[in-house]
Image (tube, rainbow, N blue to C red; front, side, top):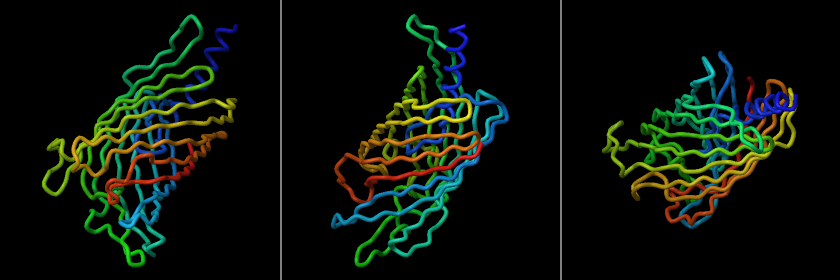
Length: 285
């Protein structure tokens, strides 16, 4: 009897963690297993902190509509449509880089260890930015006598992403680790040229704590650490380390997520530096 209840609890918590498929930020992808014909609609709000040349701070915002569909429990496909705007510059914005994303389960199983039972899942990730946003030279906006910039969040160039995410779920917490290779194109590099001068790696993961888990209501807290590591100095991001925390809650078919992230790295290049970030999202399943 206890074994059956434990399996039910692990299954419920696994769904709670693995359905957290939309990352709070760049990297924190989770492995997924969803029911067949699963569909979700999400709206994200993000605020990106930036720094001008004299180290004065400013920010711009992004509202993203995300659609996800899982034809079966082993795959998921989606699209994200970001709209970016800069209120401090009285700029009403533009459509950013449209993102196509997909995940394919390579392994999922319940592990029966001596101390307890755990759920382990690993997925292959294939994403693409279509380069529909504005390029760096068109992304400057006047803020008084200074210039604000949308780049590198909007680059206007094609970006292909390969990677893996692995999620480990216990009775009270979940751990996800992720590795993504980002292949960027540029003015002189066509798509799929795979020249490492413009490319970079995301390394990171998150730790989730289950505060409350019931059939139709779940609450969890998460901590995240993400490293951005360019191969060369020409990449659109400088080396960065993001630390974040937030809360995830679901009620029936509704999910609400929010969090705050701090870049602990030194802004060696203010035009490529992304500072502190705030995000909030609402999802309907």
